[in-house]
Image (tube, rainbow, N blue to C red; front, side, top):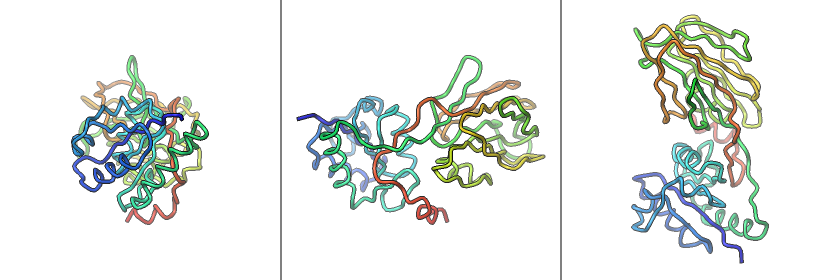
Length: 274
């Protein structure tokens, strides 16, 4: 019988998430490893999230933040998102169906050797001699300080053609998945997950351009100047400091994030944005 490897990552400091992780761990006829912070809550031995990268399935229990943490750590392994009652855009499995949904997924892997997944584009960013890990939601290039007296001068080009140049708090390049996150709060559009596009959205620009949807294959370059310092941030977590003037290149990453589980009802999830 084929041994199926399952990793479990639960929202930190959340007893309900930890309890659900324990239920899944007990219910599965599989090799189950638990991320170290989750393991501490359960009083069992754990591993780093990166050590779960060879899993056949990784189960993320919590919100979109937990999913992003898991997906970034497991580097391409299929991730199934379990919500805790509030549907997130990456977490389609309700808590009362989690154990059975994961059990069925394990049986499918055991019987067929694989699992049907949805591949969602990620966005990558690089500069001279550096790059950041791919981001599921967005990359932000921005001044080290926002608001009056802050921001940065930006010049944005798409495949070499000038899109806009102004002083702004910064600029976002978002995936369809990320359109419901930081992009939306900055006035960018919602993008259905089946639409193959990246969205470029200026942040509090002095002379703003409308948000722009570009093909996934487009190369977006952002030149930053007119500020003592700036930062580039992936998914609100991974940060690199910049020394203007400098230029960064942003585009779809080579590797997508692989999402397991039932498809999300996008329009039902929109109702949770209020």
